Figure 1 (cartoon, rainbow, N blue to C red):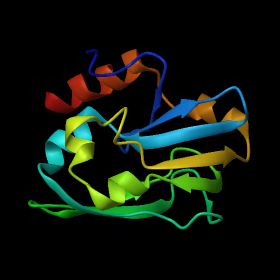
Figure 2: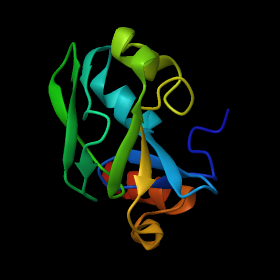
Figure 3: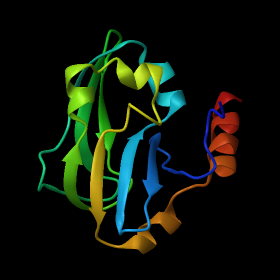
Figure 4: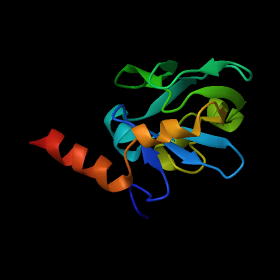
Length: 131
């Protein structure tokens, strides 16, 4: 499996977004983020119908190591939250780009995605952070 799928966009805060053709998108945290957190034990997500703003806090994720904020990589209305993830938060550790998706958002502005990184740029950012 590619650790950073090329069909996703990435934020510098380590969230990903999968843009759909229907004006909606799925959001989650990256492989890097889940590895840094360790075992995830609780996830607090916005309610369906809530409006989230790009790069603003949309929730929290608690692991055995720490509690971290989750930031929205795009703005819009929350159409759905991953109820399975709320029930079994450790799914984000096992499958951050599949069963670990967090929210589905009706995009306010599709152009916001241009402010995010592609997989290559995200990996370059991670590489620079190690040095």
